[in-house]
Image 1 (tube, rainbow, N blue to C red):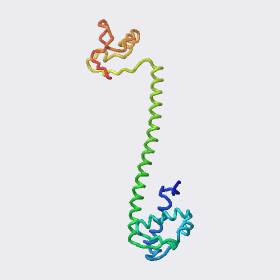
Image 2 (tube, helix red, strand yellow):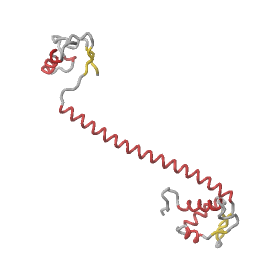
Image 3 (cartoon, rainbow, N blue to C red):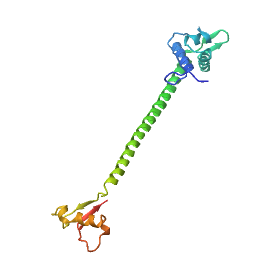
Length: 188
């Protein structure tokens, strides 16, 4: 059996019990006063008599009211109504905190999905770039000891030797190769 709930997720019977407790605390209902029978409460709040019964049972459990068979409901204690409302407020605060945490988790999951999409797109673009550009960028820091410091890249013959020989890795160069990297520090 599904519970009727408002947008805030609180069952309708708890909302009715809370409303009646507020009316007791605010003096609309006085201690010792009889209020409606279940069917009248049900029609007043547009719910079934079973939902109204559950609301009255909650208040009876808190000693706010006394349920008299075939006679209605008797208001028993304003102090207990206050205690009930304080407990409802704590429960509502916990419920709101739970809802806020779950909303935050949902937002984080959505952000993770967006981040995943961006990362996937970036990886795809990197893979496409690698397939269209066979030269993997290699960075060297040029120091003052480098013999080619005052030359252009074309004037040093660096690209011609390395592209022709397929030697992009300095460790694979032979001893006869001009010490093209003297004074250079490879950067990984």
